[in-house]
Length: 250
Image (cartoon, rainbow, N blue to C red; front, side, top):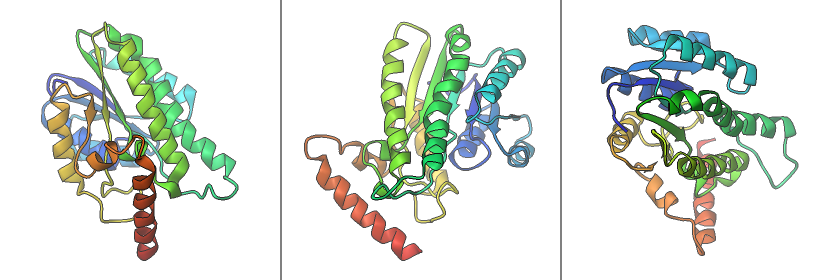
């Protein structure tokens, strides 16, 4: 994608990867609008980045999405980039009964949320001379983290959805890119030791500037390359290592 001259809407822009991407694009002179559920977090980001705008949106609520889309189209008619970044990552244990309410919340936020946001803006994006839809999936879309099984499954679904949408938009002005982060040191999970956020953002921006369909930075490449007839060994080994690491950090 072209990194300048854009009007960009980023969900989940109040912290972590979303904020990092928002600030990187803002520094390049793009018009950036961030969203999230917490008004105070959004205000802190926009105060630190004069000229950046924000909209409070709950992507688990279809009515909130519809209202935000109408506001964006009205107030930012040049909108041409959508970055679906918002997500939640609770841990679970699918060796026993699954908490239905929690599982529904993860699916609604991580899968239906991006689908609904994109659907609400797709016709507007198609009317732009050039436009890009970006999905923030995860390296766990390809090598699931067993203690976060529902989250991993939603990210695998987002990868699949991006593949289909990219094909369906092949004859339009809209491109589709997917960011598959490794473990990045953010507040998504209360643990440290991931890739420094600044390093991840720098590597991601470098790859976004190309026509790459998938943005794979750092250790994510090993997990991205895993699926295939022999994937089970790496999945089991990866999860044994991660369970041991999380147990040691507890």
